[in-house]
Structures are given as structure tokens and as C-alpha cells.
Length: 500
Image (cartoon, rainbow, N blue to C red; front, side, top):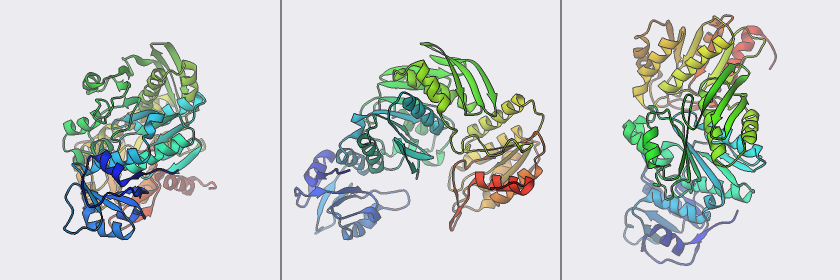
């Protein structure tokens, strides 16, 4: 993949005030991390939340950067070209777009945003596209894929150069479609600025990331940018969960065709649904008639995820038959309502990414649905925690939800980061105390999971929530390997025997 631009073109794209000579020198890379600067790169100095990129300009120059982009003027006698811009993050996005030659223009680009359900919805939409015989790229929290290639994901939506590089690779690999998870951080920090989305999908909005956004209004305002043209070009199609409290506002600002979905109402809604441990079956009523769907995904939260994919598939012009086939072939999503126990075990163990109050409530409701489907009369044992250095306001509410809807709660560490794990557990405990559920606090997450599986009896469901697909735990002074699924499987082997 060979892309690039000249310094002169970079100045034009960003409408920069130029200091120093602007040569026709080729820019070989766009860097915002000095450690990634290479000879010929253009270094964009951004004031971050913890570090100021300007402090790393000497390192970027030492590594071969040919010019600097910044919101401030250069220091006296600066030896290289300096491009002063109004907004460094917007400039980073504009440079990435031009450097990779605007790849979204060659794609049918679908963006999925919302608090919960983004990852699963992208998997489902991607599966529908592939069922039509098309090559597709998918970008999200768990993995990135380009055609048949799978790449480990670092974060949901990284900075603009990585996004545009991914989309350019997708185009060169012959993909005509790409499905992206679009986080509120990505929208607010301009990581997808300039991407030309054909369709935008909204799953829901519940409290999350308030440590970053401050208020629910600000959080919603970030999500709205995917629909209202704030990124540059408004999507042609908006797929909106019509049962969400913010649906009307999104419908009002969407400039293209709108299709709504919901369990009980909308352009696409459920006629009937049945749950089991093997998956779910539903019949969706749509403007093109009824579509019977079978899926390997389990639980009520996946009903709306499937409806979102059905609505998106119809809006993109795929037939009901292709949509049904795509959803049926979509594999279970790692760490999303993932059953890690086997038929040989007398109880069920489920790992899920639920790390908000709303997601935890839906997970616990799903467990009750599964109980009814299994005609079981067991208990729900919930293991969960809350991440450190993240929104503290959700901790007590999550404790209260867990206590109100579980029979036993084991509260433990998630990713404590720089915080004291005991202090996090104490804040969760405030909510647990408002309920009558028995609970225990265990800082060591592995020990907490082993205790839950040791306590489980026939007919019970053990829910392990919060980390889902993650394979590490972030502590104050180190990052350690940790996978809820592997720890749970090991605990099951310890109790019941069996091989690897």
C-alpha cells in the first residue's frame, strides 16, 4: 500500500498557516505518536488528556519527521516546516483522509453506534453482506477483519490514521463494504471525521463514559454526529432503534432515509421469538413481509441486535432470503453471552462484556429467560466488578441491579488500573446494601470465579460479567494475562474433571 502527499498538499488540506519552507517533499507517514515517527513523516502534536504531544516534538524530529502540525506557532528559529492549524485533531483526520486517498468513497460504509450491542450488530451486518457473496471488512472491539484476514483489535475506534489505513487496505483487498463500530470517543475526538458513511445504525443510549462526556446530553451529542452531517457528509440511510428514548431526536436530525426497528414497534419488529441455549428463533415483520430467522446467538439483548441487522440489510437492498441466511451463519461473538460450560455440566456458565447498569440488567433478564426456556428452577450467581479510572457514578447502581436480580453476588475486581480495588468494591457495595441478596467481596477475580463455580448447583446459571472477550487484566503496576472464559473453564475442570 503506497500512499502519500507533499508538504504543500498537507498545508492546503488543513488550511494551515505555514512557517518555514514548504518543499515538494513527499510525506511518507502521518504520525501523532513520536515513537511511530519515521523518516519523511508529518508529526501532529496533540494535547492529550495525560500528555502533551508538543513535549515529544524533539523525538519525532530525531526519528525523521520533516514537519510539525500544531495549534500553536513554532518556537523561535525552528529548523523545519511548521503548519499551524485551528484544530489539531481535525487536521489529523484531514491529513489521514488525503494521505490514504479518501477510501470510504470507494466503499459502502456502515457505522454502528450506541452504548450496548455495537459489536454484535457489526458481526451480524457483516455476516449478511458476506451471505450475499460480497467481500466485507469489519472493525470493532473484539477483532478487525478484511475479507478472510483477521487482526487483533487494540481498541474500538483508534485514531484517524489507523481508521483510514484500514479502509484503504479493505479497498485494495477488493472489499466493497465495511462495517465499523463507532464509539462516542471516536466521534467527539474526530477519529472518523470525513468518513462518508452510507448508513448509520443507532442501538441505544444508556449511561456510560460520563467520566469523559460529563453529562448524558454531551454523550448523546457525540453519538448524534454520526447522523446529522457533523462528520462532513450525512449518511444516506439511518437505522434507528425506535424504542430508545432518544430515537425521535435522531430521526429529526437524520437527513437521509430512516428505518426504525424495535421489539414491539417500528418498520421492523418482532412477531414472535423463542429462546434456548442453542440460540434463538424469531419472526420479524418488515416492509417486505415476514422474515423467519434462526440464530446461534442467545438471549433477549440479541433480539434487537438481529432486528438492527435485518433493517440494515433491507435498507442496503439485500433480499429477505440473504438476510436470513447471513444471520443464521453469524457465529457467536467472543465474550458476548458466551456459554463456556458444556452439556456435561449440571449448570450453565456464561461470560459477557456487560459493564454498564443497563447492560447488566439485560444480562440478568436474559438469564431469567434462559431459566424459563430450560424449565429450570435454579439460582443466578453473578460475578462482576467495575473498572478503575472510569465513571464512578455507575458503581452503586450496578451493585443495586446485581443484588436486585441475582440470587448470589460475588463482587470482584475488573480492571482496577490505578485505583485501590478495595475502594472500588466498597462503592459497588453501597448499591448491594439496598437489596436483600447475599453477597461476598473478593478482590482476586480468579478466586471469585472459582468460588462461583464451586457454589453452583444443578440448574443454576453463573454469570461472569464485565470483561467479556478481554484477555488481560489491567492493574496499578502491571498488565497480566487474564481471560474470564479460560479461568471459568479451568474451574469447571477442577470441579468436574475432563481434559483441556
